[in-house]
Length: 311
Image 1 (tube, rainbow, N blue to C red):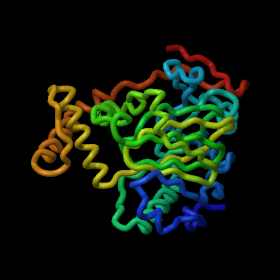
Image 2: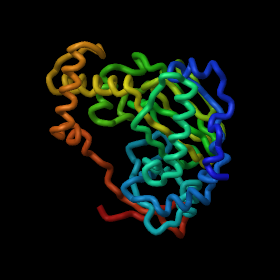
Image 3: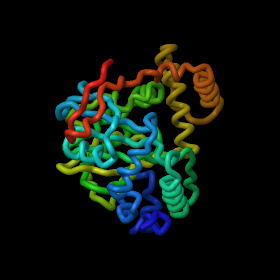
């Protein structure tokens, strides 16, 4: 089934969802699993042709241990072997910016947001991207938040999502500024008692989750291979808040100023100029330049196993 026949992508959108979108957590039904674009054969073919600079392949440490995570490359493994390795090992691959690599997924992204903008009047989006995440049974995504608008679309397998309120102590101005400066989404503070205040969802194939901007969350795969799509986007309001967080991070971290969070008036626009200057001069690029070293490649002969690379 070709993606163009997915009309609509959302299968059970109700009138109330238009009011709730971006204001409350939403779990909605979709039809992406019906598309041949998300069959294992299609994904294997996509993996084989994917540019090396556009994917992230990670081997996870023991459950709950993120210090031992390692980044690697596919090597000589076929796409099918990559998926088999993920199904049997502690691995995940994230195919980044798939809309830019394959225009079929870009067309799907456009269709999704055309439906959203039709159903949520005035909700205009731009700088949209999507990615495909294939992850091992039991894999987990640590406590973090996303600086852009974010949705998670489940294709195969089941995830448990813990969603936390986007207010202190779960989310602080300092955390917003840290992520804006360093893109270190999983570097924010988490306490186990936060779970007492989380809303928990079991995301099944054919369901997607959308939540209010910056809502902290963490994710656990159930005991099965998981295939998901992520979508990210900006609105003018989201962009303005990101500009504020970047400028406030510079003021707090570089000049020891405790800034306000007003997003209008002369004060805000002076911050807009500050963060723009930081981008032009390369300050933000220097702050974000750290990249995990590639230390392994997949072993095609042994699913789930890796071959170390010289460092």
